[in-house]
Each structure stands twice: as structure tokens, then as C-alpha cells.
Length: 63
Image 1: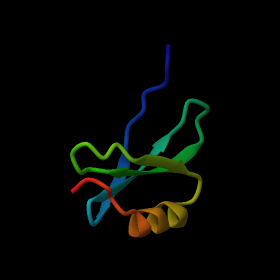
Image 2: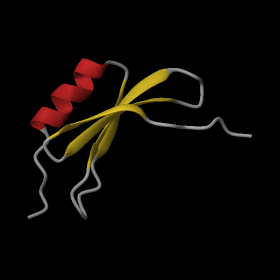
Image 3: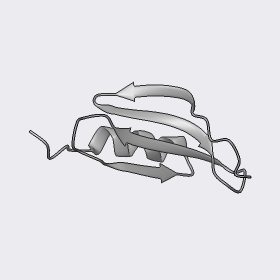
Image 4: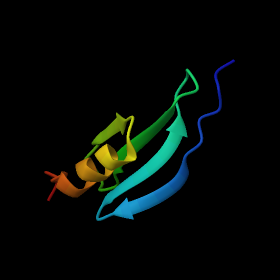
């Protein structure tokens, strides 16, 4: 049975949301996800500062 994957402490930087979750090994990860339609960009990071930097520098190619 897979572990339940819930996002915690979600914050928004522009069109990008950052959330904290646990991966399937129980480690805490920070995900940065673009919320624009048809963009589809997302990435997992081990440090929250890295996720924040990615969110600030993400340039959505969807117009």
C-alpha cells in the first residue's frame, strides 16, 4: 500500500506554488509547481530555498 502523499505549508510565488510533502521513502521534499494552464512545469527539491529560487526564476512559456 503506497504512503499517503499530502502537501503541507503551501505558498505562492507568482504563478508557482511551493508545497512540502513526503516522498515514498518518507523523506521531506519541496515541490515547485506552475499553476498556469498547459504549462506542466514542476520539480522536487530537498531544500526549500532551492524550490523558492526555482519558483522565482521560472519563466512560463505559455502565453
